[in-house]
Image: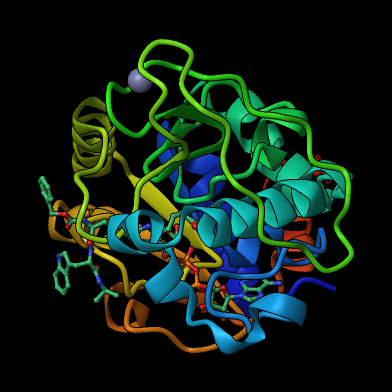
Length: 255
Ligand code: BJW
Ligand code: ZN
């Protein structure tokens, strides 16, 4: 049975012509990909992810940081999109003016059939040279058990260490993606924010932009977040359950 909040959200979503879906790490949690702030395990448990995801950490200990990313790539390579990812792709199919904006560095949205998500924080699979930015192949990672220190490959142009193609703390986001996300947020009718703590800026500004521009912001998250006050509807629950229920209530299919 559909609860009142889901039914209200479905009504607004079903009528909207311009939608933004904004996702964070909680979107991938039920696929087995740990959220950014989840406790790290094994070799990584004594590190703070907020300290590893920095250019300073990579400069100080490239093997530590590259090994951490290789471990995470292995987890993502084994993971499969869940029904929530499929439901996001279904929203795109039902509402042609949907823009999917993700903070996630995995590729689960693409594998669920979403077309061209904007990756505000880059990708685990788009390595580049840390000195000259030349694109570099990302070696396949197949051991998700515990991870290990691993020296990064070297750039074939200038021999500097290759780095993950993600946005670390203190680095600028891809300007065109950020602008496109802000523009879509300013002109949408409904913004759906899913599985993000809303703590990391400037990405966390996107739902605020939508709210200020008069859009209805709907949040899907099992926990309260700093975004609660700008969300007209808070659906407290996991993405893999709530998103398909929302799509089903809006259009009569679960994605
Ligand atoms: C579920 C669930 C389920 C669980 N279903 N939900 C303004 C104010 C204060 C600070 C700043 C500011 N502006 C900038 C800053 C500094 C900094 C920042 O924001 N710091 C904060 C920590 C305070 N920002 C930056 O440094 C940014 N750069 C910048 O501003 O540069 C300035 C500059 C401009 C021009 C030139 C040069 C410089 C860059 C930020 C980059 C963030 N990168 C990371 C790492 C990417 C690579 C990697 O993954 O290793 O991106 S950090 C990390 O956080 C990652 C994520 O994309 C991002 C957001 O996290 P997210 O997705 O919200 O995940 P979690 O784990 O926080 O939350 C999970 C949520 O899911 C929770 O709410 C759960 O409840 C929920 N959940 N299960 C649904 N089943
Ligand atoms: Zn180079």
